Length: 69
Image (cartoon, rainbow, N blue to C red):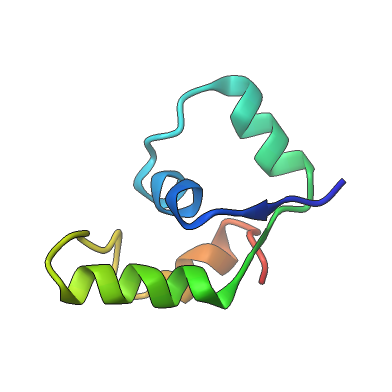
């Protein structure tokens, strides 16, 4: 089973805020994917001052976490 992760989940994952071990295992073992829309949405919210970015290199961070899109 592959999961398409919501922007909120991707953001929390990159910020290290997901602490539920079942959720962590599910994300790590499911071949989770991230849509380019997640990066776009985070950038827009950051520009509006509503969401600080986890880092300026979100795409690289997602790739480093084996979250592919």
